[in-house]
Length: 516
Image: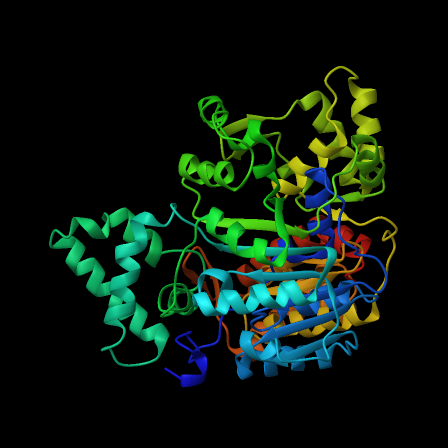
């Protein structure tokens, strides 16, 4: 372990990823949904990400919000080098990547004050001292009215995995190889002990969920190394996080996982009844985690939160837009929510989905559509935004951003999808300037996007030709359901089917949101 890493995994880079909860429009919407004034997210706003990793989220925020000033901080020089290279390729001039520890960043006097500060996961992967450094930074650098997003592994949801993490971290100390290799060796040991009767290590289903999560096996190993091997690893109770951040004059205002802000969707009736015994505040919020066994929190804090009257909130929400992020055929009124299953009224939401399938619409438009369809019981602006964004069926568009174009965003998107086109990665995250955010593309989506973005006519034949040529040039076998396809005619048919789907279901979205 490198001494400069202070017990944090540093010999393998953290996986790249886009986390839309961290984007300015999403944070502003979360504030409004909860009845609080949002932080400044207009022209000239300042944004900081702590523990930015390879910089995917920070770069997309900079590309999608060209009028913002973005600072991203990470202690790992490999992360910063990669992030700077991506920013340079996109000619981004509104972002700084700084190689600093959380202690070192507090010694800098040349940083601006920030409207937004975010961090993904690192809060529970660092020491108590590291959390104190972050709290000091927020106290010093977050503007009054500014927002801080802190996402972290939470207790008591992690209780069952505490013995597993302890054994993985300790066994890794005497095993050989990189951290990603040692964590898999440790997991094999845990599985052997569990099979031998070590009931405190959970059951086979629990361990299988650790080993067989999403992503390629090599990526999974890297993720597990960062998730389980940090020496200062510590899931936290919400009440302890709120208590610490109170020293920076921060107060919890809600969750960026928007469904959590709706008691009817996030808690069963008996849960809500039990919570009535406890006044609103950090303890009640913590008790929710006991009731639903939440293992990861997305906590939004504001320095000096200001409540807004419902009329003012609705006026601000009216100017926000939504864009449908799923094909119309996949838009659902029945959905899984923390409290179980919920059914949205089809009389209201089917017309809303029909309208969004034609392109982005303002919340005012969508509310009017629902009212025309059936005035009785029509969903509020808060419900439409919270439910559709909370289920990831839609993404928010900040007021005044319709039609926004960013040349840097388009350069970033070409560079990002080129890595997939050249078979260097399996997914790519792209900037969507109209939303101020982005989206992640799977392999075929990214390949189609790159072909069109670099001049191929957006037609099935030409795009299919380009993708097949690239596969052949790279010597990459085409697989379908774990079967290698070698027959040229079948290869073309398989690729063409995927290309046609992308052009039909994704081209309109990419174009309307400024990605192309």
